[in-house]
Amino acid sequence: MEFLVFLARRHLRTRWRQSAILVASIAVGVAILTTALSLTNGFEADLVGRILSTTPHIAATNALTGRLQEPERVAEEIRRYPAVTAVLPYVSAQGLIAHGASATGALIRGIDPALQGKARDWSRYVVSGDLASEEGLPGVMLGSELARKLGVSLGDRVKVVTGQNKQLTAAVTGLFAAGLYEYDSHIAFLELKTAQRLFGYGATVTGLDVRLNDVFRAPRLAYEMSAEIPANFRPWTLTNHSLRAALALEKRVIFLVTLFIIIVATMGVANTLAMWVLEQSRELGLLRAIGAPARLVGRLVVMQGFLVGCLGTGLGLAAGWLLSVGLAFFPLQLPQDVYYIDKLPVEMQAGDFLLVAVASIAISLVGCLLPARRALKLDPIEIVRRTS
Image (cartoon, rainbow, N blue to C red):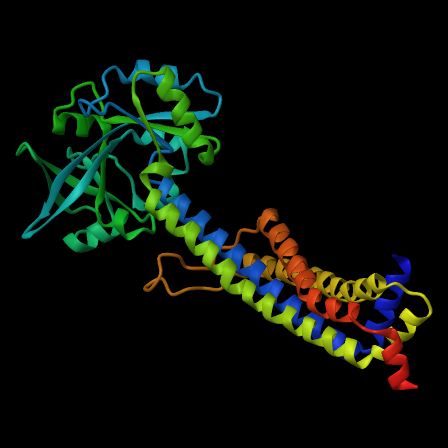
């Protein structure tokens, strides 16, 4: 093995310019791929965070009646699970919000602001204001896009109308922006007790918002809770299944498309090794003539491709890590009038770097097979006779 490494390194140093180009081509592909995956992870994490700002990690409801009876008793049973950080009661119902001649449908959610503030960073997506009452009127917090459609701002009065033809006059005391158009244009928040009175819920609620210390454990915990607690448990991954599937597909497409850069670079490695086998056929024939087995010559070709692949992959991983760190500390700014995020989010995952490294080296080895096979077929007697 040491002899093979010595010969392979010597040849690569002899043709150092060509070797450097091959290493650089693989490194560029690996760097681009790792950076692209880090950006994809960042977008996914940012999107999940925005979704969970208004969506329960697990929603505990009663699918038969639409109202959860004795929510405190159910909440106590849910709190027994160590992964649960908070259980928040909520009311959720469709309604109409009107201001002057403008009116639009909205999802009215009744929440307890005090509990929300303790359980999560409620203020993260609050643009201004809160849910406090104003001048004897209950407060309502509107999504930024919903407020824009209605043409209202803080302090304005709106009417909240239910499907039972009940209505409530409320003051706009807060605005929030989750960064997702569907949420910002269709959701309005009321205080829990106000929403219970408006929709005639009494002491019942629509459901419980179960918050977890690890959001990705939601599907398994929801299954466990359903078997032990008399309620319906729906994890956020099921509620947003289509979006999650689209994100996963997008990541796979980015991986495959960018992987072609590495494949093209590896084709260059294979082509160079094939040319080297032709150019160095006399030397290879002499190796065979002095007793070197054919497999040794084939392994020499593979070793060269392996060294180029490893060096290019290592440099590419380092470059991708540095580029991702640079984008994390000095993010590229995006126009907020076009996108709902103001900068490119980055999240590096060790698994992605490992997957890229394995794929890159594997492709490099596969690219060496044809040149190695050609080297195995060299006839030392014929080569020595032609070159003598």
